[in-house]
Length: 199
Image 1: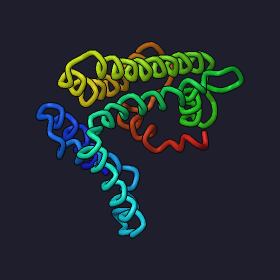
Image 2: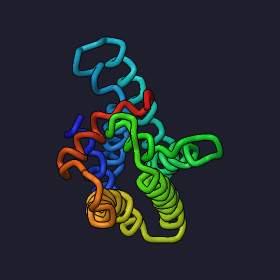
Image 3: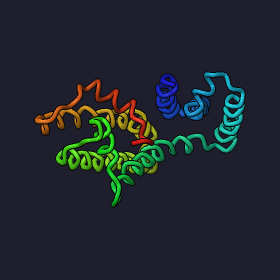
């Protein structure tokens, strides 16, 4: 899985720089393989058959229809927008903000009111950031050179999201230093281990 996640943006960026249809196809197949990775790795014939069928469709889309680049415009909009909806829906009346639920679960079910208020605000920040990334991707796809779109969606957007984690963490530790907080690496492990369907 990690190699696919790393390979995908690199292939997209190279295809944008070189206007190479083969690289577009490789990027699209790589993207299609990510959700199938576990089943592909275990050698399930159904997963491999599905990937081959998707590869054939993507070949037709790229080389016959000429829509490979248009297909590559979709994930940088769809993925952050979908995540933004997940965060945003948790802010609706009668619901508990997503990051508040994570923080409460990490503290054994108890969260001080100050931290509950703060984590709701962090959920708002993540919601806005994700929708901003989606809208920026749309704007760049429509108005900017392909190279600029690719640089933002395949590298800068990941850096922005990656920077939010440590910035928020260290701000929280300073702002709410009266409370105990896990170490940074423990914090990342907690986020990775959290079952978001059960909190």
